[in-house]
Amino acid sequence: MRAANILPLLILVFSTASYAESKVSISTGFITGNTFRALDVVSKNLYATGIIDGMLLSPLYGAPKGNLAQLEKCTEGMNGQQLVAIFNKYLNSDPEVWDRGMHTIVYSAMNVACKT
Image (cartoon, rainbow, N blue to C red; front, side):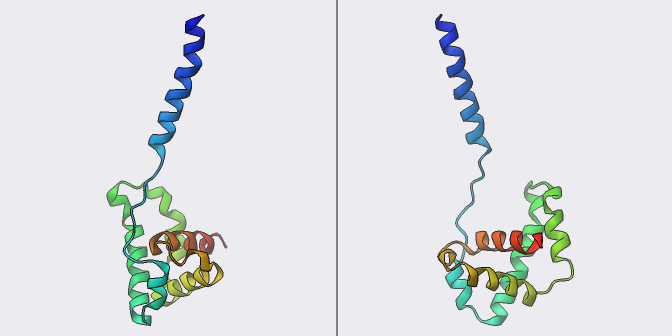
């Protein structure tokens, strides 16, 4: 009878541990949405192209290349001004995120922009 009670407990413990290990941890970025909004045009363009270049470089750090297909296709031929327009559109539509890390805002903004 004890073995029958322990088995469901073991399943629960190991499935929870497995789930916890699969979570992704994102470090705090360098700037927030508020900081980005205060940058001049040139700085915004440089930040925008730099962060997308960094995302496209992520396979060097172990990210699966296949996960970037949508971003690669979506940003092909874009320039810094277009990226900044995407970021600004997202920021203007959602002021609650202005205090969050700009890198996570960019991720969300590109997901929205690249689905259309």
